[in-house]
Length: 460
Image (cartoon, rainbow, N blue to C red):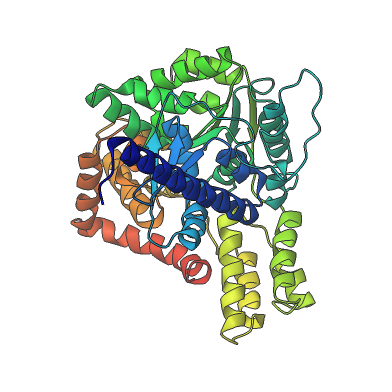
């Protein structure tokens, strides 16, 4: 049987129509199933920024118009997308396609929750955040002001408290608050100081610093953690200053966290500190007994009220903790004792006894610095200075060694803490301590002082 060219073209056109119809039907089925799977309003917002297509190779093309959207989809809903598409098409994969010319159509993805639209007010302003995420936080007098300010930043980025600067000792919940802000806002980006510094340096080396700038400036709320580690880094400090200026000038919000007050960030450009002080500076203090009671109640309720007795509850809530890390350590021990059938009576009694005798110590850089300063009878500032006298050097070497052994600080972070010293200098100090018989006694004394806390609070 022979076909004319016209007949061949007609048959080909009809075949393509059939294939296209099948593909469109699959996309509709996929979107319907995905809509049923996704309940979180935040996730639905991100899906509105995407166009889904099924290619000839049966792959699901996830078409986005920016790297930022791609990264957000990957972080928040990609696993769900893959699972749903696998149920629709067992042989296809999910592939991102970046198309900067893409114009996202409205109502591409159904939003189940109805939003009241006020005339002349853009709809996106009403759905740009989800404050319910803050309900997961434990709130008390120690952090109420910081959380209230954070909610203001989320609901009105760039309007008030800009920049917002949160400071406090390690473990009190600064990072957790910043990540809560990130989760509650649809247009936010969290980055810690180490990642910021690494991205900045790589941008300079690869001559594509604008890629890094565009990434962090594409959101309404930028969250930068542990900025005290920028001390002594002139280039990155200048970049931070210009970034803050950009956000202020474009009615966007910046939230910074540090374990030091702005005035104590010695070595930061004066104009950067001035910018910070022009916003809102608030601290987060150690958790109070009310907050500890909330944590205990929550975990006790999860175990049907059988995790601890009323007497054990009252004994525990009489104690004072320095950070949520300590509290988490206690709760972890209560849970593991319950799961193994050991019971918590002896553990709680031992814990109360140790706290009553002031045997539980807070292993922070400040505590270790205080110890080394008292041991060698020299000012704490000298330990962190460039002074090279034998006594000061020994105190500094011991401080670096104990920081590495008893904290989670990296070698680079320790170097920044002790006067912006290099990675190799920190390693050299640690080796000098390990090779010095004279310092072994001081190490053993310190280890004996803190071993009780490590055995009790960090065995889980």
